Length: 137
Image (cartoon, rainbow, N blue to C red; front, top):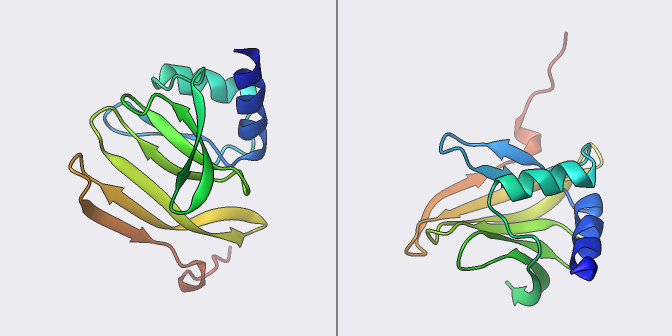
């Protein structure tokens, strides 16, 4: 048990993970560069992720850590880059975070795929930093 907590703390310290509130009350973990690992663990627990369960696997030809129970709520972290690449909920809905690029020296997922509980793609978001005009004050 302690081994899993240490691994998760390492992942959460190095990986871009943060909580974003959604209208259903759930939290999507993403982009937590400025939070202490304990804050992240608390948010994960409140969101229903069982971070005592960490397994290894592969996804999209990447070696990954799977945090949580895949039959409930889980998220995937790329072992090599330690980037957050997928989350899924207990209903079977999932979101993939792809094509990370550095933006202001931080990795940003530029391609997000949303799947319904049947595994069918229903929405795609593409972020291109070059399409945004810099604000001037």
